[in-house]
Amino acid sequence: MKKYSLFLVCYALLFPFLAQDWYSVPAFPGVERDDASGFILGNELYVGAGLSPWWSPMADFYSLNLTTNQWSTKAALPAGEERQYATSFVLNGKGYVFGGYNGVSYLNDLWQYDEASDTWSLSDSLPSFGRSGSTAFVLNNKAYLVGGKHATGAATDEVWSYDPQAAAWNQEPNMPFGMRWRSAGIAHNGLGYLLFGRDENNQFMNGFYSFDPITNQWESLPSFPSLGRSHASLFRLNDGVYACFGIDSLGQSHNDLWKFDELTQTWITLPGIPDLGRRGGVCLSDGNAMYYVTGIDEGNHRMNEAWMYAPMLGVDTISGSGKTLVGRYDVLGRPISDKQNQVVLNVYSDGTVKRIVQWVP
Image 1 (tube, rainbow, N blue to C red):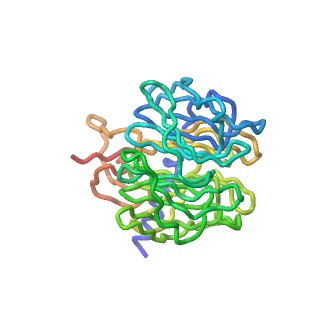
Image 2: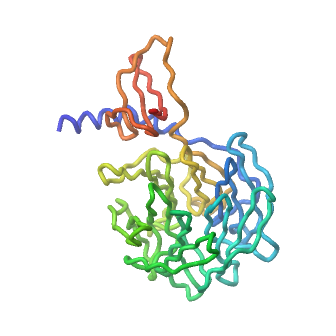
């Protein structure tokens, strides 16, 4: 009980510093939209396609340089290939956009983007029906396409993998927990993770699962501790898995942020974005920071906003400062020892707190 009380005290003292992790970055230069696609190649973050405020699918793309924070116009998808609800991923240094919905048809095509030539080329179409709102994660140089919705309006439980070396798709065992559309997925430490989504009855789900590509098995993890959602985001930073935003079964769009604590197998709430709730934006991470671009807010207004969540902003230096280190805590307020790639909150003798990445050789 004493240790738990100390944890609560430390977390309460450190919580205000965690709220300083959100930063507004230059707005997306295209028209406002939601249900867009995106990926990161090197130091460039790409965002494009999606649905405009006048309900028109888009094909244009732009990139944000993560060093200069400057946007540039990039090649659009070819004329006639406009879409929303497409699924994007990166394989072998190439960006990919799969499927989606063009306002008339559900698509099964796959487009590859080459950064050096700033060009799109048609790659290997999925040998099955078109679908929108799938999610994807990349494991062992393969992209896993999970769920989605097809022309009947029903969600699917199918899982497909794409191998760019073989230029081939392979159907994997279906998800054992049912159909999912507009769920959120990422890869982390060799596993795929899936959260939220709507099932074949359009019910909002809060289940959380991991996928092992070696055994082709899914494992059920602790569910999200609130209502199910869709159009939400799951992302990874160097210290773990996070979830944010989305719309729930009551029609509420959220501005919250959660982290899954792998040690205790629990969900922990963190300070959310200091702005309106939102859903359907592009959520991308380079491991050190997460970027959330475009989307639709709780008033159903499409946006061109861009935000960065960055809890790891520097390496600590205190030589000559006259202060001493009196405590080291993780982002949940727990005392920790040195650990490589760990987000650390250092507490000093003068009462200051500094957030760093603790690098241990």
